[in-house]
Image 1 (spheres, rainbow, N blue to C red):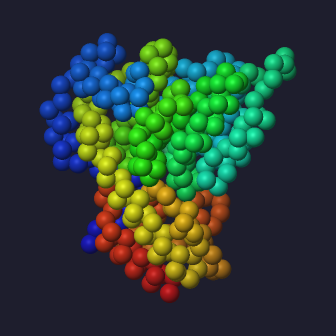
Image 2: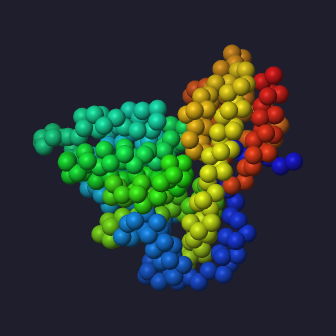
Image 3: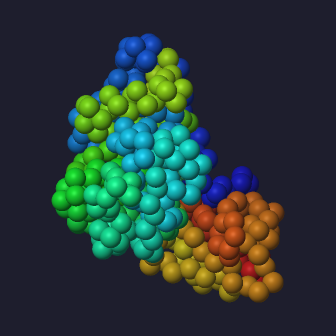
Length: 345
Ligand SMILES: Cc1ncc(COP(=O)(O)O)c(C=O)c1O
């Protein structure tokens, strides 16, 4: 029996259709704008998110960074969550590369930033202050149990942003998971955002790549930023071909991943020595706590791996993360729960 890989949806392998499309892709020099496959993927992505234009980039990290560079100048400030992936896991690229000052406000358990916290964080015109420029939201929110942010919340943040002449960027690494979980059109969920980045290489199963969407002017700036970061790829249509399959074939099935995550959470909630509230699970990411006194998350993960199940211990706490994806079936969840039940029994 194979390993049940629940560490991340980045572990997904390209499908047979993707491999075929990659082998047959028509390509050209994308820095010259001449790769027909990339051009098509970018047009499709812009259309799906209701934006004027899109840009293919190598990763979610690059998508967030080129977006910040396009929106902000040296010394400008971004407002983002204390648990934002961009703040935690992107090497502080905002400051390190962009000279952009991050101002964090607490993430609520559901991934939102409280509206009053956003308002309070916005700087007035004062010679001592950096200039507030951008609100950065994450949808779904990785560290907040993969929670999706709803359209009503986006509208409320949009109202604040307009009133203060700020831009909104959404780190939508799992943006389609959010749209599917909420049962809304991606373009409606994206409407309040000036830019959205999303990953093809997570639940959508492409081997490489992310997309940034926004206005023509924004994408021109993001394209310049991509080039200076060394992200101008040439015949990368060979990779983008897989991304086209992601958009055409992999979005609708994300609901299965969400159902499997719920099933896993419900099973874990029944186990002694583990703690999770399944009602908090809405998409494909779950976090739970190891509460058994003599077991660390690292030990828990080692023991289940011996039974063929992989999960990720979260550094510095009692938590473990599991993520469902294309290669995980409902039967795999049953098998994983069987292994975990033996470990905890
Ligand atoms: C919410 C979020 N944003 C951005 C990223 C970065 O994506 P990448 O690993 O492609 O750079 C991730 C990766 O897991 C993520 O979860």
